[in-house]
Length: 208
Ligand SMILES: Cc1cc2nc3c(=O)[nH]c(=O)nc-3n(C[C@H](O)[C@H](O)[C@H](O)COP(=O)(O)O)c2cc1C
Image 1 (tube, rainbow, N blue to C red):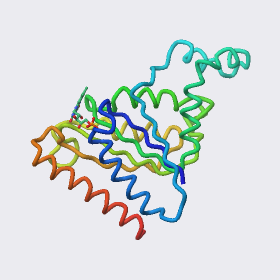
Image 2: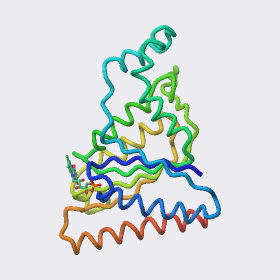
Image 3: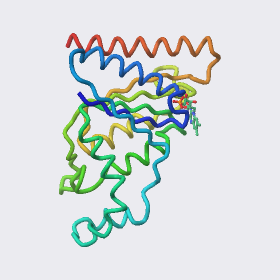
Image 4: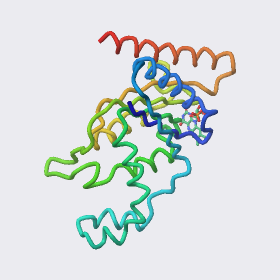
C-alpha cells in the first residue's frame, strides 16, 4: 500500500499537525499489517506558486504545440499529480492559517487540481478524474473551530472537502488538534483527546 503524506506546516516535523498525522500513519500501518507499505513524504512549504507560464499552459492545453512548449512549467505539477495518482491513501498534515488552509497547501492544490488532467469541465460542472481513495486530514489550530466551544469560523474543512471532491476525492476524514496555543499541561490533554479520537475512528473503521 502506498501512502502519500503532504506536510504543510512551516514547522515541519516539529509541528502539531505532523504529530497528529504520525498517529494516523501508525493506525494505518496497524490496519495493514502484512502488507508492504511505501510512504512518500511530500513537504509543500517550498513549492512555488503557479506562475504565468503555468497559467498560460493550462489555459491552452488543448493546443498540442503550446503543450510541448510549456512542458517545463508543467513539470512540477505533473510530478505532484503523479505522486497523488499512485497513492492508495493520502494523509494531509496541515495547520489552520487565518481560518483556512495555509498558502503552502493552497499552492499544492493549485498544482494538482488541473483542468483536462485531474478534472474535466462538463455542461454539468466539474467532474473529478482521479480514482477516489481515503484522504485523512490532520488539522492543528491555535484556537478552537469545531463543536460548541468554537471560537472562530471554519472555512478550512468545507473548502478543502469541496476542492478535493472536484478532482474525485470524496472519502475525506478530518482529525483535529485544536487549541495548540494553550499552556503545556492543557496542550497535553488536547493532544491526548485528539489521539483518542483517531484511535476510536480506526477501531470503528475496522469493525465496520
Ligand atoms: C500565519 C498564521 C495564521 C494563523 N491563523 C490561525 C487561525 O486562523 N486560527 C487558529 O486557531 N490558529 C491560527 N494560527 C495558529 C496555528 O494554527 C497553530 O499554531 C497551529 O498549531 C499550527 O499548526 P502546526 O503546529 O501544525 O504548524 C495561525 C498561525 C500562523 C503562523
